Image 1: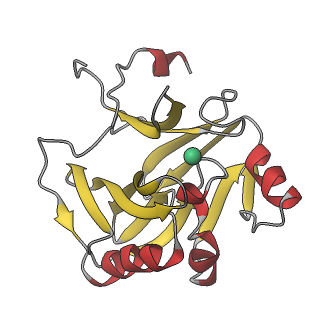
Image 2: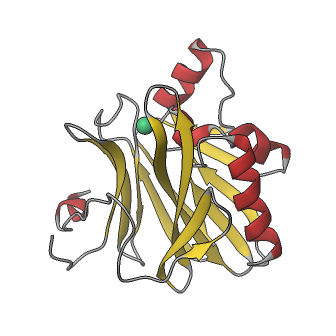
Amino acid sequence: MRTFATFLLLLFFGLPAFTQNIKISDHVFLSPINEHTYIHVSFHEFEGFGRVASNGLLVIKNGKALLVDTPADEPTTIELYDYITSELNAQVTTLIIGHYHADCMAGMPYLQGKGVETISGSKTSSICKNTGKAQSQRKFKKALNFDFEGSKVNCRYLGGGHTEDNIVVYLPEEKILFGAVWLKVWHHKIWAIPKMQI
Ligand SMILES: [Zn+2]
């Protein structure tokens, strides 16, 4: 876990200027990080907040897709899912849920219906259970490491941050860390790439 501390974090407030974004619809687009990893950015009208952007990760390898978080509503999740399957020719096999908010898991029931394996921290799962929401099939307390098409995926619960249950996901080969933070006026998820100056 010490590895995490070695990476500088780049706060994600908007569109990365150094990538060519792929527009899927007016509600969702992909921002490539490298040839098989993207940030998915989507927009949802939240009562009292207006149109808010949220983001997640998409990794594609050997025709299989891993998602970290879904867009904040089901129709946008379907747009993203359909694009991955028909345009990127990949089967979505795995979804990791970062925390219990809608912008991580509103699309989870839809993806479960498509046979996608869903993973979350056990704290997220208990919150969902107590509030009558759908739960992930697989859960972990502190750490979960697994292989996705030959690449390591490390999930960690390091204690509360943006929410009491939020986890971080680290892709060691890609050196990408994805998590969530609370900022004073703006709460959002973050992604990180090493050796990048803030
Ligand atoms: Zn949140």
